Length: 271
Image: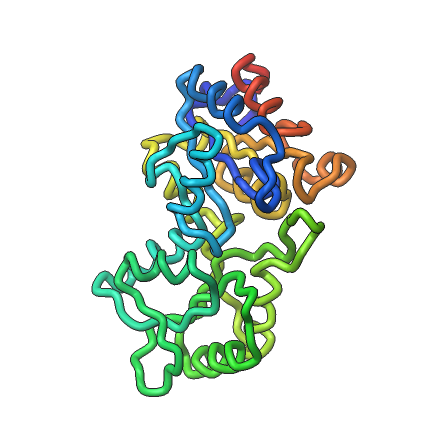
């Protein structure tokens, strides 16, 4: 579908790390960005591959800038992973988790509970995301379960993440370690897979062609949007530089320094 054939944008999907902030530091005027979105009656959802933080944490961070969203407008890869498991196992159960509070809490909200030493439990899945307290024992336990046939879910494939100190290892590094130890590829839930995007579209009652994804990462944010027929905007405030963005095939529909510039082009019907 050519851009001129798309309907008007109704929903904005925003990544957060590298788009709104880098670590604790805002990248742009967050209040102005959301005021601009709201003034033009666009729906907005924040969708992030970051599985370490809870939905409530992200909502509190936005409130610091005068932005108030409801829980349905904030979707993390941890929440999507828990939602995916809940569809398969509505009664909940035991899961071996390699991850931090965001993943643990999202799973608990769907009645899934981490088992520290899973030797005599009926483990439904191994769920892995970014874990900055990772140990050798974690990898060994996860690999052992996967080799026994337990399904292996990965929150997201990001090899790196932006931080105030520079680029740091992401969840993909940990997932790759478990894949190597178990000889089994994880089923990825977060971007660029469709599940995270589709959760937002379902909640907004919106078609992919009515949405734009704004992110900083080509192989997740942009590729995922392109794969399901969304428009895409790449910001240069995260992990991607302009020459790399322009070389991407197909290129993002818009490339800009920050998310506000992209929203202004959306409002001006330049996309």
